[in-house]
Amino acid sequence: MLPRMWTQDALLESLDLALRTLTRSAHAGRPMPRMATSAATLAGSDDELRPEDRRLSGALMRVNHVGEVCAQALYAAQALTARTDEVRDRMKEAAREETDHLAWCERRLDELGDRPSLLNPLWYAGAFAIGLVAGRAGDDRSLGFLVETERQVEQHLASHLDRLPAADTASRAVVEQMKLDEARHADMAERAGAATMPQPLAWAMRVAARVMTSTARVI
Image (cartoon, rainbow, N blue to C red; front, side, top):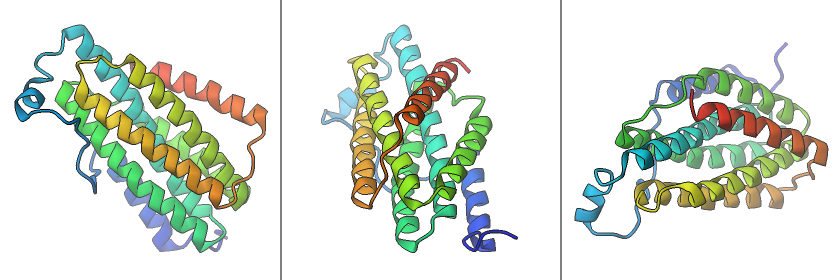
C-alpha cells in the first residue's frame, strides 16, 4: 500500500514535473536576471566572448543546469514524503524558485550555443531516490538535508562566480541570483526546524557532488 501522502494526484504531479524538467519545458515565473548595463552592451556581450570563454561558460552553466535538474527531483520527492502540510508547502515554494533557475540555465545554455548534460535522466532519477530517502527519515531530517544541500550549492555557485569570465555578465547575473535564492532556501529550512546533518553524511554529499559536477562538465 502506498503511504498516505502518495495520492494519485501527488504522483501525477511528480511525473508531470519530471517530464517538464527532462524535456526542457520549464517556464520561469520571474524575468531572467540581467546586470545593469546598456541595451547595446547586453546585445553584443555574447558575440564579444572569446571562444575559450564561451566554452568555459557553457561548461559551467551546464553543471549549474544539472544542479537545477537535481533540485527539481529532490524537492519533488521531499514534498511527496513530507509528514506535514507546512513542510510540504515550504518544499513546493522553494521548488518554484528552483524552476526559475532551471529555465534561466536552459536559456543561458541556448544563448551560449551549448547543450545540457546528456545524463540528465540519470541525474534526475538519482536525486529523486535520495530525496525519497531523506523525506522518509522525517521532516526534521529532510529539512536538515535541504539545509546542507543548499549550503553546498551556495558554495559551489560562489566558486563559479570566481571562475566565470568577467566578460560574461549574463551568466554571472544568473548565478548571482541563484546563489541568493539558495541561501534563502537554507535559511527557511533552518527556521522550520531542520536537524543538524551528521558530518560523515555531509562529507559523502560533497564527494558525490564533485563526481557529478566533474562528469556534467563534459557529458
